[in-house]
Amino acid sequence: MTLKDEILADINNVFLSEDDFGGKHIVNHKEIICMFDDDKLTERQGSNELAVSDSSALLFANSSDLPTRMPNGSRIEIDGKIYVIDDWKENLGMSEIVLHHGESRGG
Image (cartoon, rainbow, N blue to C red; front, side, top):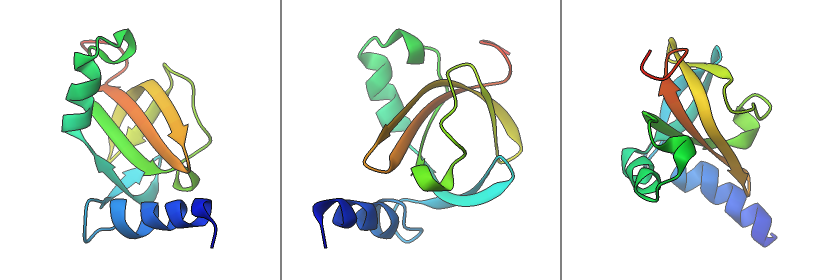
């Protein structure tokens, strides 16, 4: 097993495991296991990242479970609520998506 294989297995079997950190959510009409991380969002906001300063949620998910990476400003539906993507990063099979509610800031 390669290091990449081990990392991908850890994403699914530990980090996004329902027994550990993950939970079932509906993303664009597809049920996936992912997690919201308020602490990491607060950390990113404290670093003065302009793109995330007014964001309201940070979602981690296996990149293969999500739609194709969407640009900032795109809308995505999670658990029946519309969010706008502020930032979307992918690293070693894990997506980190920073979001805010509604169609516009403050909306």
